[in-house]
Image (cartoon, rainbow, N blue to C red):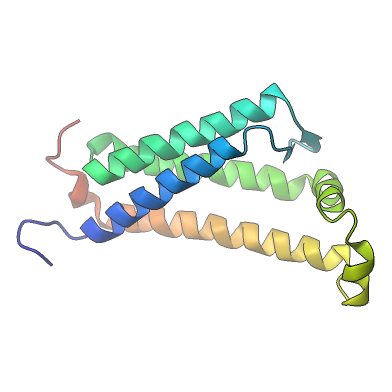
Length: 155
């Protein structure tokens, strides 16, 4: 570690870059349909959903890059919101099934010939969602562990 750098510098800087990339992908997805609150939604509501995530990821990326005090709190706020979002996604099973059916439309025969059914895809998506949420909480725990990184860095 270089002299004068706090522990966690590389991790927080790398995370900041990845969050900025995520924000860009959110902006590219403004018109994409999303399963929200038990239904597949599109239109202005989903646009606002993607803009909110883009703003959240951008703010968190900038805050982590600059090691701002407020970004420490924002890590936990973002983690909680993301957890809630994935929870509603997992619990909205009917919407998730419809969303998967739409995404796989035209590939049903190929998937069946390979022994892949919708139940397997549902399990994979649910497991992936749970793992991603656990990764967010792992990062929040790491942030708590390295909270000194955010001290004396300005507002």
